[in-house]
Image 1 (cartoon, rainbow, N blue to C red):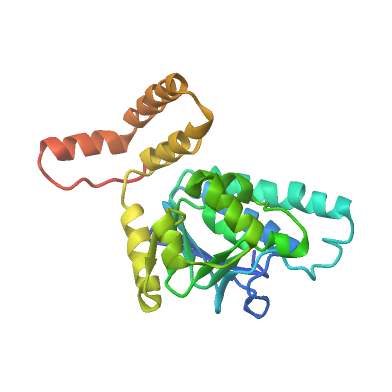
Image 2 (tube, one colour):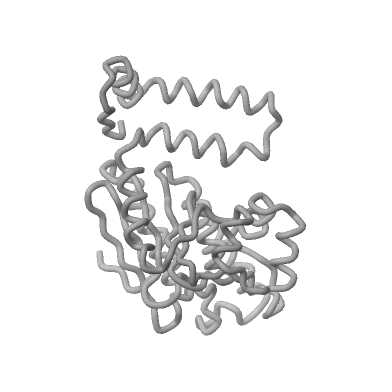
Amino acid sequence: MAFQTILFDSADGIARLTLNRPDRLNSLDRVMLVEIREAFDRIRTDASIRALLITGSGRAFCAGQDLQDPGALESPEAVGALVSKFYNPMIGDLRNLEIPVIAVVNGVAAGAGSSLALACDLVLAARSASFVQAFGRIGLIPDAGGSAMLPRLVGPARALGLALLGEPLPAETAEAWGLIWRCVPDEALSGEADALAARLATQATRALGLTKRAINGAADRSLEQQLDVEADLQAKAADTADFREGLAAFLEKRPARFTGR
């Protein structure tokens, strides 16, 4: 099935999802939000996919919610339904993908577009990119997981500063603050993203997924609870072909050949 608002393909273990409304700075409407989730469904059912890149076409990553999406913002009830029925499931699906997900931020990431990027596992941004908590500019609050991710990544003081002031945060500062993984020169972004995805797609995919599960829930657990989670997930990791291959490769002093199983 062809998509209307995104581009999606996969090759060599890497899926690429491109937000494709460049004339609207890849702003999110309900069609796009549904299609993103459909792409996630394809990834979950395709064992050959071992890493995912998310980026935007044109000069922006994503400008956030499309304020001209007919009916989406016509009433308080419509806004609440937009968040609960479209944004929340999309972010939940994204966070539950048990493969590495890389946001490749090629331009501005504003509002829900910033939240989408920050919900990914690694954020690689062009030096010219910026992150904007634009919600307050139209009298709304951070959504799409933004209010959860911001304080976890940069602490409550900086999270409140970003959310209350709505000032653009340059990618270089975002890297220095720990908001994103890395900022690179614009001309190097595509190559760096491809190399990072290729590297992750050859690793022990199940172990990476279990690592995500352990780290993403750690903030909500006590140390004792986290130790129990580690024991449980480590047993699951040890019950994989990749663990057996990794152990054999170490003992035989050769590179491991992981298959993602």
